[in-house]
Image 1 (cartoon, rainbow, N blue to C red):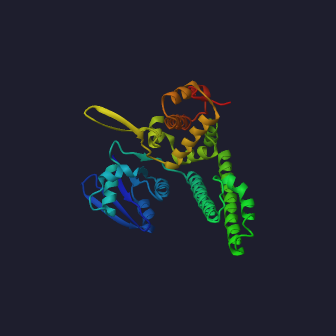
Image 2: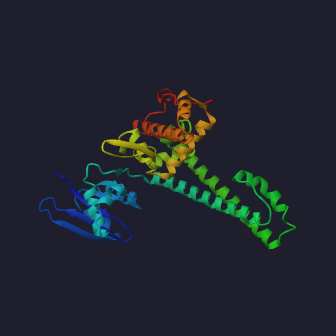
Image 3: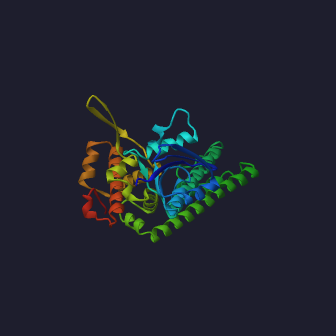
Length: 341
């Protein structure tokens, strides 16, 4: 017997369900308060529950799966075409119900609590980096108004700061000097907090076999390995390495008509954070490693950034192969895209 399909639009307080009775064809719309969601599904027969992948979606997916239901998380782009002109909770739930039954629906792998914890540490670190950049740029701007030019880059700023501030002690009011010192102290505190988060990520890498397997890939370090495992979730969600690279936005956009197809720049779809890490890894490999004939030839034919994107695409496919096939990285099977000194 075919399982009942339920489309569920989640929110903070009110949840909207949409289903169709498989026998009578009756459309059933149910509105639930947050506290009533789990009791409702605990008494409901096992069903296929579809949820749009958004805030708290993974939490509810884990809870419903524990109650014996089959849960599918849908990418928002798969749901949007089925939303009616007037967007309401009921319309969203109906769109989710319709989208999950389409053969081309894009699914999102359900993440575990451990994977979400790793991603949270990454988000905290990225936020602290932004704050540090803002504070450092503000200090450069403040001192520039008084004729002192500080170098770009955090390491260079940290080296030049003591001498620069000492040269302004006699020139500026004491209240301003004290305020500048306090702001620099905040920058140093953020350095310590970033280092603390990185130590926790390193501990998570040592405790996770998949992260260790990815860290063996040249160019993939602590941040990329932990972020990839936590972001991908279940690698079998993607049919191939190319599908994973396309999900990350590391393949060209296409447009065409009349049988003629043109390839444009990178699509830049998917997870921005992981794509950025892979692009940085590719740049580091090209800049610091012994270039293979493949990389050298690519650089001769195409611009530098195109070669970086191509190598990032290759790294993404390699990461998927290691996770999907559950095997260690084999340099010989990598077709020698690059070599390390």
